[in-house]
Length: 361
Image (cartoon, rainbow, N blue to C red; front, side, top):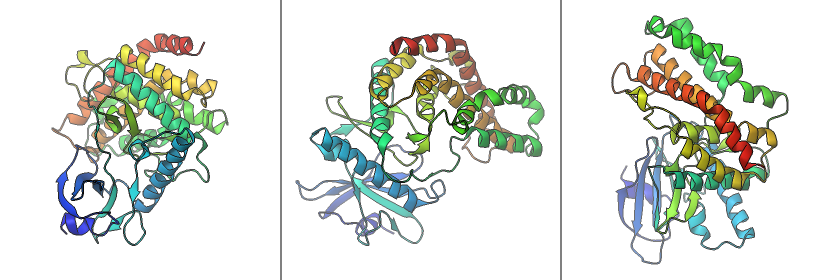
């Protein structure tokens, strides 16, 4: 089906002039719909990967609830330019929040004009990112009604990820276990330590909140003067620990090397990024975080790096059935790089704890 034909099923304000590819997303195909009238907005058309997000209606309803609540919060603060400070969903003409063409699911939002994203993280942008994600969580800390639905069940569930590893070990489908036995032993020896968040949750000590679950700097929009506009890519926003968002930013943006770096000497935790992100995050999130949550922020970097090490290793043992690979040893290299980062975070944990304590005095 032609893109213009698909777009015609949505309640757009004006006639379409052209549709062109937009962005570098790995999950969904994204396009910009340009309209003819100057005063009318442009739009973003996305094909939703329903192999990843199996319940599209649930996900879109989550996003509508999130964006409407944030818009309400911004109105309470008498903010202007609301159309650029949160996403606006355009429904299909049948009232649904998506259109199904018989094969693919599609959605439309208003294009946020004069906005940009960044791919590289500097300490300065780490602080801005921390403020932005802290504020995002703060806005959603009193989201009314039932908790959001889980768009990817067990996405950041540590016990589930470790169980997947144990099943992979049991099956040894690709006959690779001997090669990685030492890594397996090290990871399983830390199982209890790394399931701490779930243990504290079950004891009623650590709350689940609304987490973004994809805290990358390129999931934020800035205006042309580098002022923050809004958090985007809300597909994985669902109930979770704040530790998931904080820790995953440290795992990704706070790595001096690449996620799959072949030169492990390049891989370590960037303490400048950690410190600035923590500064920004605590500045905007301290109003709702508990003392326990704040104290566990350094641990969150360990937790999320350990989880990703487990996931890459599981896929390697299974014979590379989940992640795309560039070569047969790609998941093994990813495992080594993440394990190296974990060791670096371990070595800096005391310094991280002292920094967090200094921010909360």
